[in-house]
Image (tube, rainbow, N blue to C red; front, side):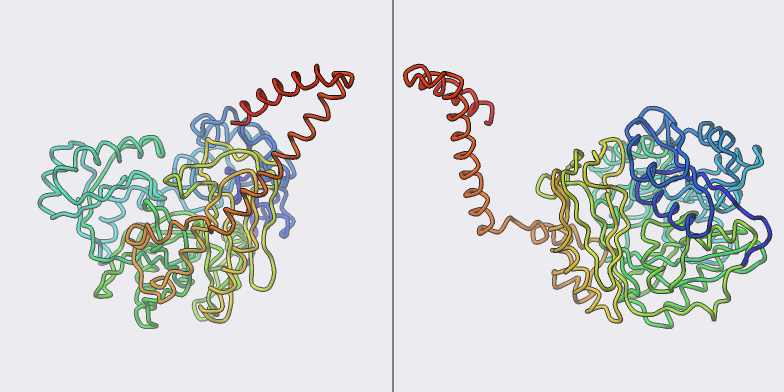
Length: 510
């Protein structure tokens, strides 16, 4: 597939598991890698994996991973031929490839013009409408004024979605069911969008009845080739953030799958796209589908497609950036079923509060059909400054039932100590009858919220209490022995010392 523009060194402008993921493929291809890191990531796994590493600055993303000038300077200093943006951060900012073009450095991604066309959701909607692609009813342009937005919401009819015009990943997105709730939700969404993307422009969409979120992975090259690689069902979402993804989708048949794939290719061609992209759709209860947005980057859940097609999408990105061609559509063969579960450092019992801290012990699962894309290790301190996802656990099998069984087994094997993670919550999702039946939509996590919050097994609570009692007894015994020795064996003196010291220890323990 090579087109002659050989890339010998790539700077990965990201962190965590996606940076590790890109570095692994580069190593297989014989391409040297450069990691970038903030103060919080000095000892991170992606820094350890790369051939070189460049410090960017303080932990806040705006001063490190979002600083275009620092990324370009790092690429220049290390002699990188190209920059891979991963996902998130600068991956959908046309400012980065433009700055790289000026510096005569390659970009493993689409042209900035395509990113401009699809990066702002209202602009993308206009392009799709002009191309004849069905879109969800909504505002044609970003709305700056709250009163104007509220009036438009009334015209659309509640419920409506308040959405950030830039960015993605569920940030800056709120569902509003009533007019009286609109002002607070509007302001909250704007603040979130400004913090996540540096852009607080908002627009509105009609909320569809029981929508399912189904996306199509596409790939295009500079020679006019463009193919779709199948779909991913992403309807298990909490606060509009995907948690579990699978392929194929339970709601699509071959005819609907093909129709959506062809529309996705049409959408990519309409903006002169190149590289990996994802066209996202909502499928309503009547199985009509509507364009939602296009992500002009690699998706978090891209390994689902890799497992079903046997393709390495990062390798294909690099080959296309070198001038290579994508496979023909009839060469794309999909097989079996793949499911991905995102493992987060968060506490479901405390409203999914992030749980940063030191991982004292980590054992990731393995075995037939299991893949773990992680960015952490035992002893690593999960920082508080970034998204709390620590890995993506995937299972592949010939059938959905077998894939579910494999993923459930792998979740049971996954062991993390020192921080709280959402493993039990993910297990509850897989075991829920609605999910197992494939009868779910984007409201799944909200509808079954109480059922998914699994309480600790009483048997394990008893074991934990017994273990705590034994530990306390041993601690007291060791303390008595130590204080007795220090007092020279004088019973009267040592008893008073022991009593006072033990009270102090117990108070500190509480």
